[in-house]
Image (cartoon, rainbow, N blue to C red; front, side, top):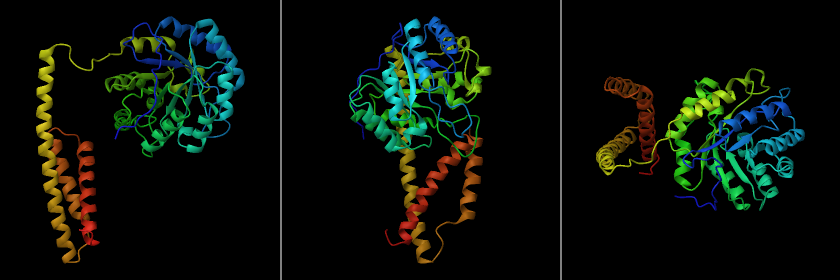
Length: 364
C-alpha cells in the first residue's frame, strides 16, 4: 500500500543536479568561531546543500554537554550572512521550533528521541503549521516503521510539504561494528511506501566512528538514498559531543569527491536487455522458491494434525536444532552466509510453528 503525502521538492543548492542533497556541519554548535571556521571550509568544498549544527543536545544522561541554546542560533545567523549557506538545526519542543524560525533557520529536523513520541511530534507540527520551512524526520530510536510514518504524516498534515526522512540507524541490544544498526530494509520499505518522499542517510550516527562514515555513505547512495547528513567539525578531537564520528572539512570533501554516483539503469539498450534477462531468471527462481515454501507449509500442516491426534508438543526443540545445524552447514558449503541462512530458517520455522499452533487450537 502506497502512502500519499503532499510533497514539494526540496531544493539542493548544488551546481550539479545529479548530486544528492548534502547536509554537513558539527554535531554541536560550540562557539561562533568554530561554526564560522567549519562553515567557511565547507563552503569552499562546493559540496554542501545545507549547514547543520546542534543547538539543543538531548543527551542520554545529565551532566554531558547539552548545547548552547539560543545564542547558537545567533551564530548560525552570522554563518548564513557570511557564507550564504542555508542552516539546519534539530528541534525537540515547540519552543525550539519557534526560536529556530525566529532566527531564520531554513531546515528543522525532528530527532530520533522525539520522533518516537507522537505527542511531542504533534506539538511541534502544531507550532509550525503552515510555515514555509523544510522539515526532516529522523527514524525513531527503535526500528518501528509505523512510528516513523506517523511522525512524517503528522508534520505533513500541518501543511509542511518540503518534507524528508532521515535514516540514522537504530539502537540494538547486541552491539556490532556500528553505533546504530542500519536496518537498511526499513529505509527501503519507507521508500517503497512513499516513493515521492526523499530519504536522507545519516552515516555519522550509523557508523559511530569516522573511518566507517565513507563506507556507510557509499552504501546509502548505492541503495538510492536521496542525500547525506554528515557531522563535520573543524577540530573533531576537541569536540564536546560525538567526537569519534565527526570528520574534518578536508576529510569530508575528500569523501564526497570519492563517492560513486550510480545510474538507475544502463544507458545503452543492449545493456538493459542483458539486465532484463538476469531479472527474468530471478523471477523464475523466485516462483520456484515460493512454490517450494508453500509445499513445505502444507507438510507442516500435516505434521500439526499428526501432533494434535497424538497429543504431541508443537515445538520440538531437538528437531529444530537438527534442521538449523544441517541446513546452515549445507548452505555455507555452497556459498551462502551463515547469518542469512539462519534468518531465513527462523522465518520459515516461525510460520510453521504458527500454522501448527492454529491446528492444535482448532483453527485449522
